[in-house]
Length: 68
Image (spheres, one colour):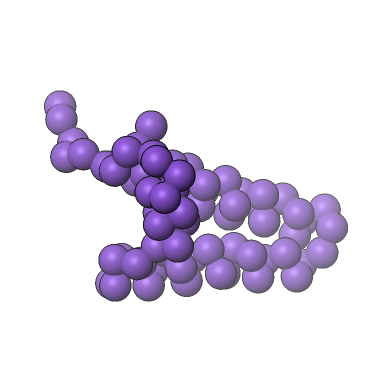
């Protein structure tokens, strides 16, 4: 897996976990989904993603152009 796919999988997992926790534990867990969504939105405009930087420092290979 490359950085792009890991970031998308992590963000999607966090949103799903947040929704499940909000349903079973407390509605305050929706703040996690809000934070993840806001981070994805700002990343789309600025190109800065904290998780992508962490993964790059850990040696995960960067994303490549999509090939059919």
